[in-house]
Length: 210
Figure 1 (cartoon, rainbow, N blue to C red):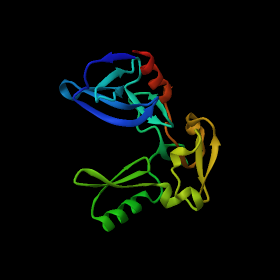
Figure 2: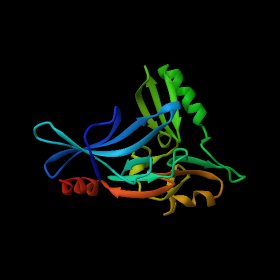
Figure 3: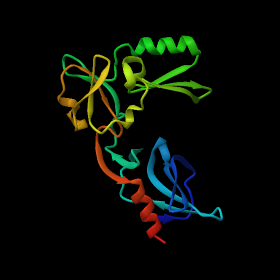
């Protein structure tokens, strides 16, 4: 990892965690360029007991990345959201046009009188431009214990919605393109993973880089 002197003007906090008695953060660092262009990279921040901060850039990592399962995943850039709910039609077209989703969104709009945004079955209400309340599509279509659980804690793989339950049909998310008609769920990180590194290894590398 490459050490840097200061934070970029814009950044999002992805994780805060204590490691070996020190406070660590993983951030998404955003560099804005001309004509609306921008680049992103992950950085690790160690906060000292005296309040000082040391910052490392995670080098040679894809610009598209996400944090899940205590692991940082690099994703193929230029792809839509690579995880969540998908529907496969009779003609084998993959889309996010989930059964009943429009009706769900309309019902939430009428009840809360707020804007509703959906991203592959992650349904969010916004108030004043800020997230107000969240649901997963599974809350509305699953039955039993699956309805209340965090679906992204499922083991990596591909799941199909069958009679109100999620049934694992493959250990490989990329097999989504080979499935029959139906509704499917991919827990994070989903499709297009090209690189990964465990959070503990990121912090350990920072500890070693004195």
